[in-house]
Image (cartoon, rainbow, N blue to C red; front, side):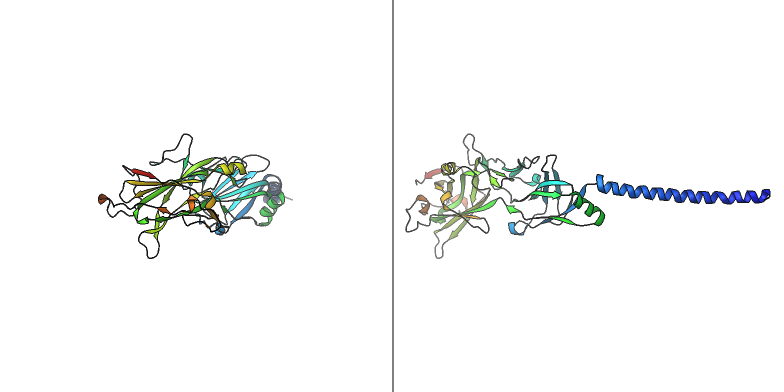
Length: 358
């Protein structure tokens, strides 16, 4: 081989070496990538996508957002997910066993209640906020509360995300879901009172003692502490063919009665103090009722109805709660228009108080 042929062979050898080196490098990178992927799936990436299938229909709430809390049963920080997608959204969870809580809206969106103890499942609770009143003066230590916003809660204990679920989700795209159905924990109570002389009513309001102010989510029951709930009576309904007699009614949202022992329950009455401002704009009628014995619960809607003043059953002894309230006839105030039912009357000014005995 002469010098020229040798030089040509050398020049052809370098591209071949570069091609072989390139192929080796590509194979090495692909091998490492495959190994890395398997390692991540098997050891490091331990999160699984879980779809939240939430059925809000039965609770009657149509939320525009929700919160999902996942508490590891072996301790550690809970995972908190906020979303405006109230069903069908996905969360990614590490392998483990969780106690799950779902409720409508974000905790910070509520005005008349707070959701406290969120760091642990066992301490998670709903607490009514204390409110002020320009017409009710509480005694020392008495807490005043007002209608909270609607709230529904679902709990699911022991939801497990396994390593097999993680692998199947990442490698095969297998879908997993968590289904639950929130239930109302705040209920509506409807109050109605038969009144003779309903045409004399300008406006009415009341306070109810002995209402629960705390709900423990994990235990699914109210606490033992109590508060006084303020109520507006905003509706007058006259009987057919009558311009004087009818029904005064109002409603309020509540956690219900406190969860206490049976003996203590007997000692805690739900005492309604009703104050009615008459159309003369100065006479105030005050009457008290124990409404607990009259509470009738609708098992389907969980709403409570309390009816007062409609008379006693023939086989039962009459109580003050059975007797219709009879109001005195007064002359409407000349500076108050036509009187009527004006919910804007907050401070009732100079009053002539009449307490009607039981």
